[in-house]
Length: 351
Image (cartoon, rainbow, N blue to C red; front, side):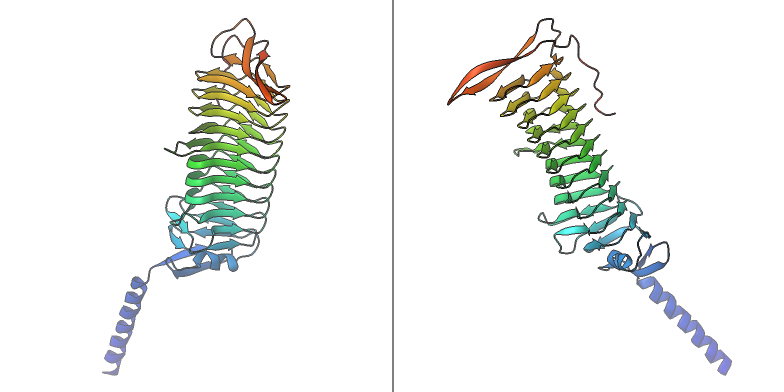
């Protein structure tokens, strides 16, 4: 009789444990040292893994929805299982993810907000990488206040600013930035912006592809179509090379000095390029195609135009009309491209 009671008790306990395990779902996060299991979707799940990790660890996050604010203060690799199904949404912080330590790598996530005032990722340290993520519906999707970081192969959707660069020597490459008021805003120097696609056609709104205040930046091989300005430039000694800029109110708006605009395909815009209050710039070997006005300048001097293709084959020099100020009076003036190209250049736009 005692043996029968004991057997029934063991069976009953086993059933209770089985039911309890099936009622509380869980997700598993792993580092290179340990495995952690917590209740699915609990606030602080990813942050707990980071807090218990060491420099150099890799943390794998399984698909799921994580409603939490994250601060990364260690050199770790944070990797989502699938960028479409591993979703992080902030709890209440201004930034969803705040990186304050060097050498952090983040990939494989969707990072999104449901509050327009909230932001995506803020980087306040160096040599970090954001690769192959989706950023969605935020004020600043990515803000970089530091140097030598890489923003690569991300999809950036529906934001006020797609990427904001306040630091120097950062690389932004291979990203798709769609429907932002400003695709990339650059205040720093010596940054590289290459092979990005920026499509910001906002009905009834002003939008810009790239806004550039810094110096010595390289803007190359991007495809840009926006509603107002393709590239708005107010810095010094920047290079605008090999871009496709089309379907815009003004393709290139140039306020800065000593910049080079070379080998770009500037087509189907209102103004192709407009120079205002700028000097000593070089506009060289560009294709100007089907713009309402290919080029115009206002109070701009000592700029060099050479070997551009001006919408048709030309043997004679091309006159570029504008205005200059003599005292308080503006008078019509012109610059000259002495050797315009006879045929358009082959500019694929993406190298």
